[in-house]
Length: 612
Image (cartoon, rainbow, N blue to C red; front, side):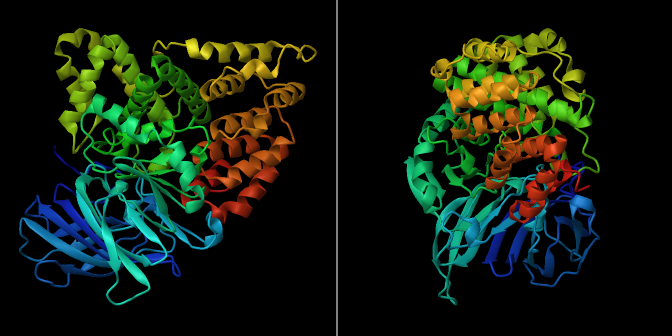
């Protein structure tokens, strides 16, 4: 597949020199909050006229660069930073460069490295040891190592990570054991190998006081010991999910599939780092009701990690397909109606996101223009849900599961180990369905792909599991405050967690409830005591919409005890939009921002109009 420097978020030029392997040797320094060591990079020469090698960096201290073969010291320069893109590293190459050549870069990360969060012992569950974890998506890998930080470039990597004996290091790779450091008895060297080529954003590292439990033939769950048994229970269905995905998409090529439950400040529900999915502790509901997030991250093993968007402008190719596959896994495990119930909830999430941005906002397009834009600023549920809805629409239009699922598997087989654009995706769709060209020509492609706002067509969803939620929602919306005795605690008795979530999501779309209704609802349903974070999130938003003053401290507690942006950002927005709580929200943010992940801190600061 042809490569070019058409990625607006990268300085590198893979069409001149293509990165083909990475070897890292890094030491973890908790006292200085830095990783230091070397990155040995190998390249294939693509353009004999190119005299310099260009790489992406951000706030890296480059100390020395050597040619791997001759050992010669290479001259280099680092450009001034360009907003969120960081700085271009330009390395002067020797007069004669082999078709495959390497450089060894001695460097150190910054204490302000945007890819890393350093936690003090008191910020962890155990309270005794510090903790380090990375988050490189979308363009933060360049703050972890000098690289071609674009998803169009995929490479295997190996690594040696040195850290304190009391800690365990893990990476998005297969562990190859650890050994005492030959010169320092206080630290150990942990070795890793990722043989499958991956984009830079999937490089991940963690160091902490971790324990594991075996939860399947190829899976362990890792976390601090205080959570590991609860996590093992919560994610016991992992192997069933992997096996279900294999039946849909083909063999799992990554060897192991482990899960790491991170501290609460982790900004996402999950991150699909190969061999080691990172997940938020907000999934630990105690009843496996939120474990389907793991189905999403497992799906990424094919859609995203194996087949990857070539630039972040085509992010929907990763996330839209992954949501689509995630719900197929749910459908096969829990019934097709459950798949449709989750899709209906996703439609509501999409409506909310479009409302937040505005129906004409360019970030509500499926394929976005990111020239001069930080991909983090454009991140939202749009590529997830709008993309999934396009695929569901195509499945129904082309003839259903039996017709569309063979295309899905062929798509993985065609583009595995590669990166692609939307145009390439569309061309393959047309090629596969040659006999259905007339049907595909009926699709309003320009509107679906390049127009802002909600999808032009809503797929046909089976609403039977949602009907009870909708009915109860309508009853509460229409009831007079003097007629609330019609409701009882048994209203939710037959509901599963998804139906309760759908009930609350429906109420959020209606006019604000009265304080009397909110009070009665809490008395009957005990929603404040719900451990399911998705339910708790929607209940708190419903209370804030009703301007229930007593809900403000509960909402502030919720956004402080965990940092998942899916929850934190909407609630901070709600608090900001209500003038009576704006000051408390701002004060809470200022007080706690140093404990937030850098990404969460920045994005919430923007939501509160405190950061440009």
